[in-house]
Length: 114
Length: 111
Image (cartoon, each protein chain N blue to C red):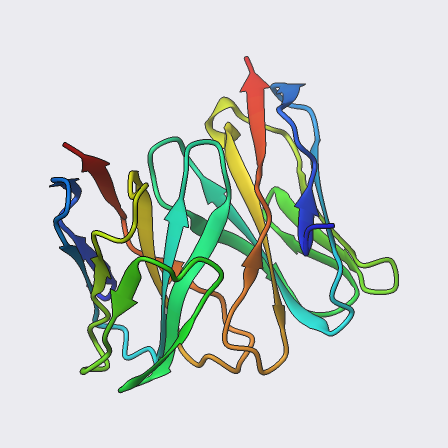
């Protein structure tokens, strides 16, 4: 089945620790996105990538980093600089960034501070 | 003013009624409009998209777009308890790499 796989489903971070959230897609989509969702809130864009080896900051990029070395993969690192990382993290992809196609989402990763 | 605004909700309707969810947007260059449904604790799933002015129907769902008024809505006919969820509106300008999401409207359908 084609889709977007996020792992792990739950993740706990210790003070001062960097953690990496995985996102893999087998849909052959060019564009990939990372969103953060806090309880009762909408989605806020962290980073997005339209092509391999290129990515752009979203609205809340501070304290996060990404890479796009392969078309299928777009990992997100939550660094120790992100002081309030507890949230639901969603990865999405769409066929072409510049087109009008919708985004499709993975199942998400819940990150909490220990 | 937020780029995409939705009714703050929550919205409660009886089973079998029509639920009306509204969304306004500020960027007149927006060309693509999407409605996602998000159940509690789950990720959003696409239910409708619309690109042209007018209505688009898919089963019990109808999306309505009025670009002059910068307004898009979602109607759910014959609402069912299983429709209880948060509905997110997303707007995308042409040739832009990203969509902007509203904060969502929570719908409760009471049996």
